[in-house]
Image (cartoon, rainbow, N blue to C red; front, side, top):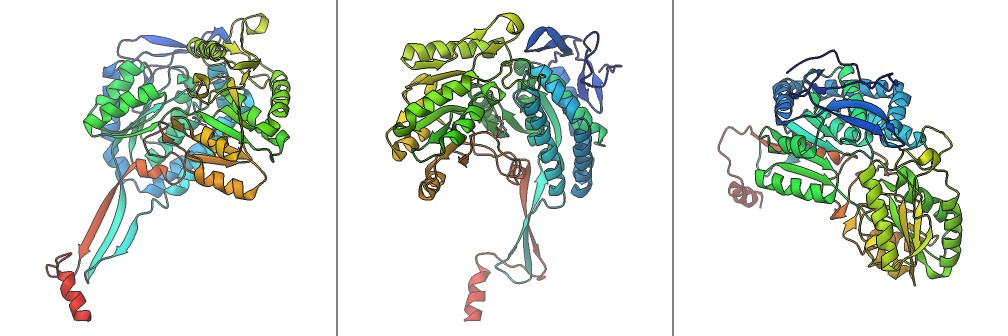
Length: 517
Ligand code: UN1
């Protein structure tokens, strides 16, 4: 393992882009091969953010070695002490919030206000998980036998592997890393190759807060080399992944064969329902934010808007006007509302779905083009795009696009709205705009998704509630909330018999009952 004099990960724009390493055992190290890859600014592709380690399975092995070595002492460190480090990290994240946010805008394009929100979500998570260090609750329950004590405690799993996406490049690593750490696990992160600098800064901040070397490590590089090596290493006992359905299913399948715990957070095809009694202007504002926030690159993005026929024309007219008024551009400009998409591949996907929508016979209400002129020439910009008269079965209404495209679907009534909202393979976030309290509660009961909003858009989850979805969105686990601890711990049930004699459960209890009678 070659150590180096690599610079601390920093947002300060260098004359010449820096070269950064993996983060293993408390310091940056080069990849075994010395090879690197570049991270670019998606708004200005001639700006290189930095060069990062193009790692191999050997680098992953080194990181897992460090994490496995650090595990016994970290497990023995009392949870309230582990939590103190998280609280310190929360304060460091606060003091470096602006620097992290600016790095994020430069590295993946989201507008600066949203980038600040992304970092804030990690700060919130750090404070929340610091509190968890003094809970990590188990249960004590009565035993069926006298002089016998029964309890369950949570134990760490060991080394865990975290595979994180580019769309929330600080928040999502925090959702996974912080509960893993407070519960006593050691960690290896493989971040998305579009946002390695954000991930490295996050990891360095946690280490600066006082994590012992080896407790939190990071290896950058491709999914095929780094991600796979992490999944295959028998010392990695759990994998938590946020990404595409395609990758998620492959990784989950392999983890199944290896009897490894796996948490998947995958796609969404979220919908906002707007009923005839809704506050239309409120719904419109919500739909605009839900559809085009983060340029539609959220798992929670409102890529469908289901509108009651009585308000359909009005909604479409107003939505077109509001969409066309959105300001596109470089996210560091405070007045810009929609930034670029993350890379050429994502832009191609968006363009492909716009063509699919047209061919399927949906009506293009506005947008529909990639922007290639003037200030947009060097970035991956696409106009916010709205299709109307969309049929629920069309591909643009069924498949996740992950870009600034939404579909307006007319419906006859409330029941049809629920049916259409539920009529996809996904189930992450669904929303209902209505003033009718009965319908609001019906929606809460019958919408098939892990997250439901009433009179609010599909985006904007807070970290103190579970985050995750049903159907093809995930495999039953939840991030954030107290539920996130479940994935990162194993239950141990403990019985203490202090009767001094052999007591047989399920058998001696008959005698006890007879005696009592
Ligand atoms: C994601 O898109 O993967 O609820 C995460 C929200 C954010 C998190 C989104 N707090 O939109």
